[in-house]
Amino acid sequence: MNLEKLGWDSYFESNFIAYRQRGYTVGRVFAEHKNMYKLYTDHGEVMAEISGKFRFNAEGYKSFPAVGDWAVIHIIAKERRAIIHKILPRKSKFSRKVAGQQIEEQIVAANIDTVFLMNSLNNDFNIRRLERYLILAWENGTNPVIILSKADMCNDTDDKIEQMEAVALGVPIYAISAINKEGLEPLNKYLLEGKTVAVLGSSGVGKSTLINQLMGQEIQEVREIREDDDRGRHTTTHRELLVLPTGGLIIDTPGMREIQLWDGSAGIAETFEDINKIALGCHFKDCSHEREPKCAVRQAIDEGNLPRQRLKSYKKLQKELQYIERKQNKIAKRNQVPQKVR
Image (cartoon, one colour):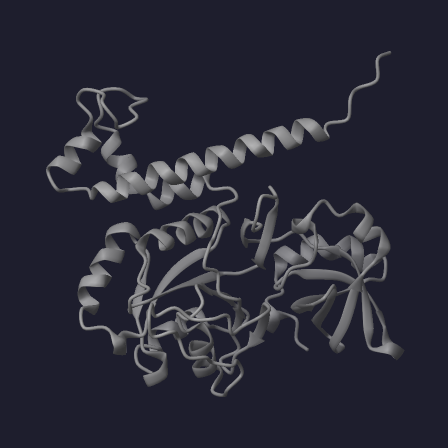
């Protein structure tokens, strides 16, 4: 397979030179199944597993291969399988905190150029959830694009687009009906040869339907949503990178009802740029926008220029990130090796 068509470029080549000189080759991870990985290589598709040394040196979930990664491999040609020895440095990623109480980073997709953040226009329309996705997209070096799906089921599409525009400043927004093939053409500019798009969103927003339309065939199973709350069940059960007829690459992901932040200091500043700009007019530089006098943010809320819920969401997400940071710092201190006394 042509590696350039799979997203290989000078960035990865520069990081691979030393390995090439030692006789290794590369492959791009397009699926993961129970600690086994499927790779696209210039020898075709191969199954792969990580080496014992790789596993021993891995530092948590983030160190293991993710869909979209470029792997340094040794191919066992007779068996049509490979051993993964390293992962090349990621150009970008979309990651979140793993579910539950563990304080670890989970890579959802790697080396992506654009993230399609899908939110349906039915009763599951959720601006606050979209803010979380935006924070992680900006933080991880990917370009977010908002896809408002199921436009055929919505009577106030323009109003909901305006609501999204108010929180997703400068982010492209497209309303589509994948099942009716409406509004899909503008998405083609993100699906160019060698470019990778990850599709993210909750169960039932129509990710599989969209991908089937873009592929031109039924690749992913589609299930009906529940009538009582317009929410869906997980259809996609694992992440997978697909090659589109356009030559573009698209990563389908399982639905994520809860998305916990991992790191977002830069992402939260980008996502809440409106509040940060207003805050420049506060009398105190460290204004908490609570009871301080001459608070420009509270004034904007009183005058109807800033939704109160927007500030509430901003503070909630800040507290969540601060909590994660404290936990990360505690773990880092605990893992520090004591210096020997000489």
